[in-house]
Amino acid sequence: MTPLSPKYDPDTPEVICRFIRHRLDIARAAGVVLGLSGGLDSTVVAALCVRALGKGRVLGLLMPEEGPDKEALEAVKWLGVRVRAYRLGRLTRPIIKELPFKPGRVASGNLLARVRMVLLYLEANQHNLLVVGTGNKSELLTGYFTKFGDGAADLLPIGDLYKTQVRELAEVLGVPGRIRRLVPTAGLYPGQTDEGELGITYERLDSVLLGFELGLDRHRISGRTGIPKPDLDRILKRIRSHLPPIPKLGIRTVGTDWREEILEEE
Image 1 (cartoon, rainbow, N blue to C red):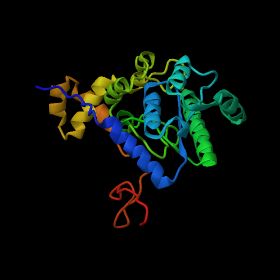
Image 2: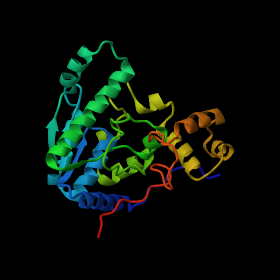
Image 3: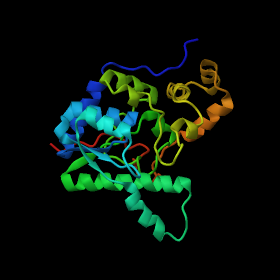
Image 4: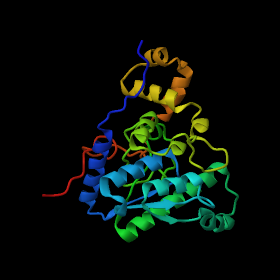
C-alpha cells in the first residue's frame, strides 16, 4: 500500500509570492516585518518575501533572549534584508520581577513569544508594514504555537504547507544547509525541541495529518503509517479550531461558516 506523504508542488514558490503581493496591495502596506530566528520556517518565509517584494521591503527582527544565534546571523547575511535587534531578556526580566509569583517554564516561554509579537506589531504600526507569520500547517493543525504570540500575524505564507513540504521548499530556495539541518525548536527554554514536545517526528506527524485531511479513518491511517491507533487518537485531539469559541447566533458566524476572502470595494 502506498505510504502517506505530503507531495511538494513545484509551483508553490510562485503561488505564495503572488499571495504575498496581493495581501500587501489590499492593505496598501509599505512592506512586511517578521521575526528571524535562524530556523527553517522563518528563513523560508523571509526568502519568499524577498522574492515577492524585494529586499528593501522586508524587515527582519532578531529577538533572542540574549545574543543572536549564529544561524540567525547566517540567515540575515544570506537574505540581505534590513534587520533590527532586540534582547528580550532586558524587556522581560523587569516584567517577571514585578510579578507576585515566579512563572513556570511554559509560562515564561509563552511570555517571550508574546513580547516578540508585541515588538513585531510595534514596528508594523510605526512603518505601515504587515506582520508575516512563520507557522506551517503541521503546527497550525496541532495547535503548536503560542496564542497571541507566534500564532498572531496578518498573513501566513506557509500555513498550508506541512513541515516536510517546507523542508523541500527550503532546498528549492537554496536555504543554507546548516539552517536546513537544524533541529526544529522555538527556543523558548534550554533543550526545547518541537518534536520532543509533540512526541512524534514531523515525518510521522505529517503522514497522519495528511490521512485525516484525505478523510481516511483511523484503521486505514494506522495501516498505511504503522502508527498505533492510540497515538492517532492523541494527535486527533490536538486538531481543533484555535479561534475562541463563538456561539452560533447569526446566519453566518466568524470561524464557522464565514470564511471568504475580504476584498476591497470597487
